[in-house]
Image (cartoon, rainbow, N blue to C red; front, side):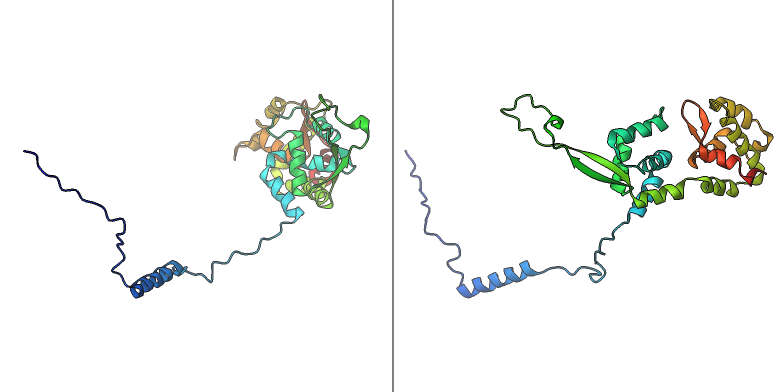
Length: 258
């Protein structure tokens, strides 16, 4: 016997909101609008004010750069000083590499120049190359359009030169020595005298002469302590050996060691 199955037909005209009045709909819409417009109060809204952006001067940017790269201070100031006369990038990099022929650092000469330019220590002038002979040759002139290129000239800014004057020179070394204990002055003098010899001297020679001195026993001092202070004030420098600078020679002849 076959069972009869009831078939349910869907009413396409069914409206679930048919029994809801238009007034109720309007009230619901108004509530939705109010809820969407609602914003929770912000705690201390009167204090949530973004201060205006403060312009940082070139002097401040240069000082921050030097403090941020203490191991590169001499190179930074030397690069600025080299730009007292306008130079191309190649000329400037050659000057820096001549002053630091053995420089193991992640900051190469072009990077130092870029950092100084961004800080405002060096002014950059872009010079276009206009002559045809100066233009780069194209491998396929039919498809590659040769555009005029340019090169940069670098000149030390007033702020950069001020940083050089403030961070180097005999006065800087004398101020450093004046802040040290008087008993250490003979050791600073000995370092300067040893590095003033022809060809300079090695770190091992300085260590044997300075670190074994009884003055270094308490508190314990090593040659590196005195060498670092003299290097950071540009009284000595490393090339192929430790050698005295012109600033160091001037200090050696001053009255501070009398």
